[in-house]
Length: 385
Image 1 (tube, rainbow, N blue to C red):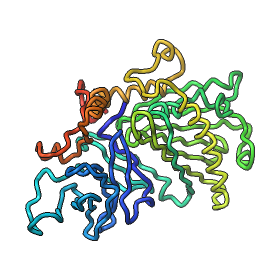
Image 2 (cartoon, rainbow, N blue to C red):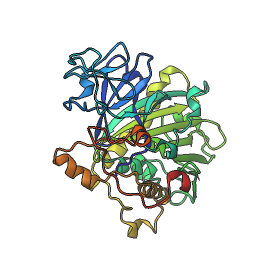
Image 3 (cartoon, one colour):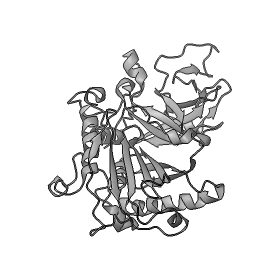
Image 4 (tube, one colour):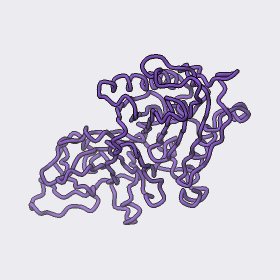
């Protein structure tokens, strides 16, 4: 399952400098670069002239990107502004000599790209209040997982695996059973929950922070934009005010591979020399999850909840909320029809993610048609939120 009309994290900001960068998302190729003002630009990465890879071109002083094959130049709107081989230097440029351009926002150290044509009804990029707050310090990490986006995301949503995979028990008579909790749906289309328990004591420096008599709270939130998970764990106990906060942004490369971007915050042990330990503790869990997710089958996520006859009676409340989100996106008509798209790709018919310009202009003058999507069967994201 892959979805359009979502804000995705395409790259870390500091990776986009004076050269184009190729990024693959939703099974399509894109090029990222900066215009003459330093603003991040994202275009469909296939030149409409002879299908060259635009990321192999170069950034020009006027803020355009030049194709590596015939040096056609494309501006931040995706329109071709110059064809060097024209007989007349200011010769006519065909209207179809353009590529899709996607809205970008540079926030929290990342370049966010909106991949779709219905920006008005999309869930907004979330707020990250810790990023500009001097009381918090952060480290980042990026990893590519050889599994589909939903296996990667669901393993993060699953509370029950914490004591089994990571050794983080919930205390009580049955330390592998999460305490009773509810999942609240938010108006922005996401959801959240709070779990209160008495977890096992950690080892190392962080152990000194925790009052063994105190309960530990874990606040989890899911946001549609970026398919983002946010967790806030009271490392020192519920009332100590000492927290480890993680953000996980999930960007599908294609149906079977995913890029995971992480930002980890802490408001304790703020000295820079503690960054390595902060990253190590969080990445330990990340790579334990990765080893599981990459072996899960099928390699492509199904379009319906997995094995509902089993999980419906168990503790998968967050899983259920996540599947609700996916089915809502599908009803909006935002899910890519992978069966049709696979057939088109195999037949040599390259398709692109439609940009807002296609909807605004209502024009058929594009070289590449848009990818097929499953027809809408319900209300829009805004209507159901």
